[in-house]
Structure formats: structure tokens, C-alpha cells
Image 1 (spheres, rainbow over the protein chains, first blue to last red):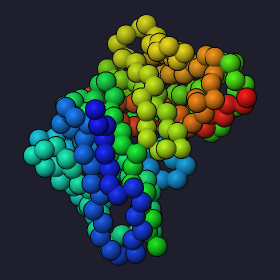
Image 2: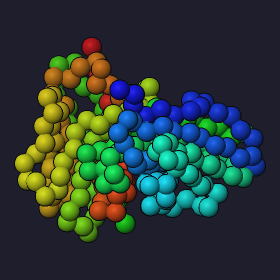
Image 3: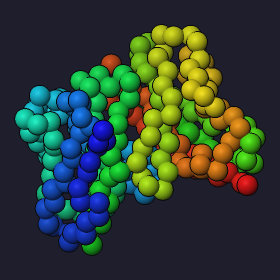
Amino acid sequence: DAGVTQSPTHLIKTRGQQVTLRCSPKSGHDTVSWYQQALGQGPQFIFQYYEEEERQRGNFPDRFSGHQFPNYSSELNVNALLLGDSALYLCASSIAPGGNYGYTFGSGTRLTVV
Amino acid sequence: AQTVTQSQPEMSVQEAETVTLSCTYDTSESDYYLFWYKQPPSRQMILVIRQEAYKQQNATENRFSVNFQKAAKSFSLKISDSQLGDAAMYFCAFKNNFNKFYFGSGTKLNVKP
């Protein structure tokens, strides 16, 4: 049973560029949430997608956008990259947005902005 | 706004001994969920244990147990019979009724052989 799959695992981008990160949820899960984890910090909530719509959003600028596809997979897009966007980006999936039984996390995409 | 505080950036324990990781949180809500996640060097966050705030009984999962003090807004994790594989970053997390997770800054656990 595949867990949450994220791609790519590592990425290096130049300041000002745009990046797309991808996530496939665990089989049977329909909700995807994205988190940003800066070095030495805990994950911070970016947004959550359910039924192909953004349902919740954290304190992140509009440069961060996302999408969910009919097969429940999701993309995170970041425009006009800043050095401060360098972080580990984690995708988490759950059965419905509640996540009362906890989320299943992927291993993340390490984004480095130079 | 909800905040989660882990006051111990790093802790060490001898193999086979017991260690307790601390976590406090701040919320005005009465119904919520609390979690402990483990993040090894592989980066994947692994659910260790969960606690429903409306349940007074402390959750237990094998060698892992929690001490949930709702009035004090405290949620500590006890690891018994520590093993080398327990070495990792541990994050305390709070989930509110709006389905947002809030994580603490983490505690790095070292296990000495």
C-alpha cells in the first residue's frame, strides 16, 4: 500500500523563478494538505485541498497556490521565489478534511533557492 | 490563535531507559486533538500517538504513552524502554475544529547505547 509520494525529492531554483511540487496521496485518502518546514522548525500549514477546492489556508502570500486533481493528487506552486522560500515542503493526506486520526506525510521536497 | 510550545530543543536518554518530552499549548477551544509525530533523518513525519481532548484517559501505544493535563494545557510524551531507533525529532501537534494542524518547534531525541 503506497503511502504519500512527493516529487521531486530535491530541487534548486534561482530567486524570482517559479516552482511546482507534486504530491500523490495515500490510497483511499481524498484530502491533501501542504506544509512548509524551515530548517530547525516545525511544519507550518500552507493550505488544504478537498474536492478540488482550497478549503483552508495558513498565513502564506498569494505567491503560494495549489491545485487538486480528480484523482486527488495535488500540486503546490510558488511564484517569484525568494531566498526565504528555501525549506522542506511536506505533503500530508487524510480521509476527509477532519484528519482526526492524523495525517499521513510524505518524505517532502527539499527546495533550495539561490 | 493556537500555539504549541516544546521547551526542550534537545534531550538524551540511555538505551532501555525512560524519557519524557514536554509540550504545552494554548487554545480557547474545548474540543481538539493532540498528536506526537516522529521525524527521523528520512524526513517523513510518522504518527506516534494521538489524544482526543474530550477523553480523560491518557493514550498509550506500546512503549509510548502521554500525560494529558487539559486544564494545564499540557501534553507530554513518555517513551519507555528507549531504543536506538527512537532517535529522531519529535513534534507535538494540535488540531482544531477548523482542520488546521499547529506544530511545535520540535525536540531532538538522542539515544545512547
